[in-house]
Each structure stands twice: as structure tokens, then as C-alpha cells.
Image 1 (cartoon, rainbow, N blue to C red):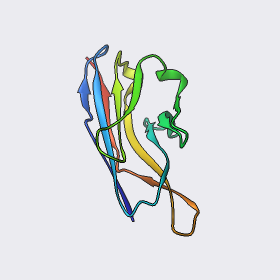
Image 2: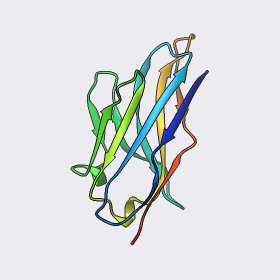
Image 3: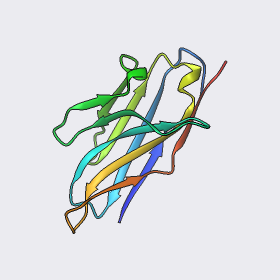
Image 4: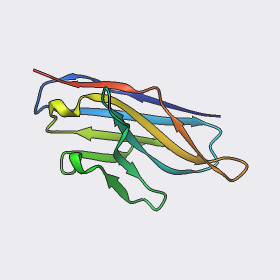
Length: 120
């Protein structure tokens, strides 16, 4: 079983910065993708930024140039540095780890989410 835990959310003023961290632990054969999604009230969960299995990064269009995903110092950790925050960035941010099960199928494990609120 894989556990995914996020940290670092909070309240920040428009234009401010915030850093989120995520750690995956447990019985991990391999992680194919790991990254961040977000869901605002009444909206679908959308891509923020992820690492692919090849090591490249994907960003949602609305955060390109403002957010940066990076690998943490510990294994199976990722961070999200958010700058130039806007009120429309307000959402619950979820960390996702797509990993391989012993059956060789892929499985998505999600954290419980961390609230990010951008308001003056």
C-alpha cells in the first residue's frame, strides 16, 4: 500500500509565493509519474504539474511560468514552488503518485489534499 502526504498549504496574498511538498511512502515498486493536481469548488480536478517517468515535466497552461515542480531531497518526494499567485489559484491541491502494482498494472494513489487560498 502506498501513502501520499502533502504539506505546505495556507493563505497567501495575491502576488505572493507558497511551497508545497509531497512524499510517497510504503510498498513502492516504481513510480511512473508524480505531481500535483488541483480542484476548485464546483470544478473538475486539473493538472498543475507533474514529472513523467522519463523525467520530463508537464505543466497546466494556467500555471506555466509561475509554478515550478522539483524533486525533493528524499526519494519519492516532489515539491511545488508557486509564485505570482492569483485568486484563481485558490483550490485544494492534491499530490498524485502513479505507481506500478505487483500485478504490473498502474495505480493512482492520492493524498488527502492541502488547501491553498489566495486572497487579500
